[in-house]
Length: 528
Length: 103
Image 1 (cartoon, rainbow over the protein chains, first blue to last red):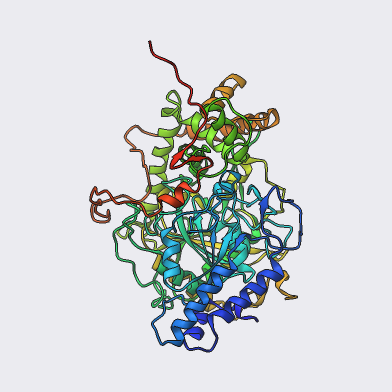
Image 2: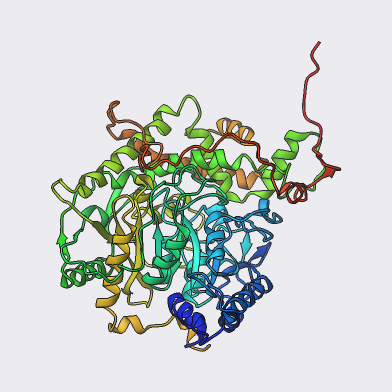
């Protein structure tokens, strides 16, 4: 076990006591990156290059990191107070602006953009002593669930099996954390983009309540859905990172003006008496029949179902009450509603990329400004942003908006009400959390789904309802399938109940601590 | 159904220039997505159900106070201008803006 494999909370403890230096931790992490990551993603890069490497990064900022680590070590030597993440190496999904770094959104249209300022959640982590390793890959503008749509290729691969996708859109974040390329990563979740890759890569990912973490400096996709959040190898580290990222921000008027509870101290408090729900609506997949357009249903794979029921059993051993047959009747409309709401918001947010003030501008000769816009956007955007812009224009057009957009917003109310009923402390169910599979399947093979935008979207169907409803949700690893790919369990809770979700997940870690599956390492780490 | 004519109109509104294979793929995918939306259109939604612009309700208790409407000079002006594809001193240069002369 190398230093880079230690948990963030252990590293902070050791660094503060001068048992190791921040520089040693950083160099160990850089050696790991050098050993497993391979070439970073680049524009016009070869999609199939180095198929046995991870390719999490777009830009590695090693020198910047070395300067930060030296400052931490000097402060400790001088006996100065250092922050709660002092010396912990972390990565940032390249959808956040970080001053003086390339901030690309995985798109050619921002491939040369150097951010002039730093996003609030990243700035808070740096202030707390975190060491920024660099920016990690993602689906272009976060539009995808496999990371394959990035304009920067090769795109990330799954550390548990490099022929599989790491999930998306925070695929670089999840892959990096799983492979020991930084203990922590900051991702974003619009429909499952933290939780789905966390599940695929066997790590912990938290989508906080909408408004818990500032979006200032986040390159926007669906402004009413986007949530920055932590990815980590264990629950305690996720709690530590969330603690730092959270809280009201004068630069984001949608942040909630509520005190941030202590996520760390009470993690191991007992869960006796907490009520956990299981819903049949989260153990079947609804999909659209390609021919008829009608919704069809099938159960999720039996081994995945059993894995989640085993989690429920272990939580029950710890004293939680498991409540079955929880009705969530509107879950199946989450994806159709998302198809409308997210596209309208994406189209609106992507109008700003026009080649005028920053980013890519066409090199072709043009006659006028309109032609410059068309060529710049035609060359600069990949297929997925183009698809979302066109869909957004269509469903928000005056003659269709009642039928589609307004209806989708009403359906969103119905989705939210399903949750309000089950979490009502005076209601019939009185749940503290709903326990579900995070994804309909384990990590799928590269190139199997990519290109079919409908099928890809359905990868998010167990996660997206929490985004519609604004609720916090957490994915944590709970075993492996017969091919050695991780299963992810999801907990969804009431508004601002992150502390409860983290506590439940930490208790699950405690009760499974000595399980054999916990000892497994991603195959790519066996020879480093 | 998004016809080729309607598709061309959307492409014009979206200010995109597409190659023929791109256009064909995108129109086909749009029509696939529309099929996925048919169920949404079929859900019985009463007019009394209010639309939700976001999930968490913004009560006065959790909404941060609105900032004072003050002019604050940006410290990033130079860094921002340095990003512009073409500048003339401190002006950003763009191609001719289509316009009509009024009589």
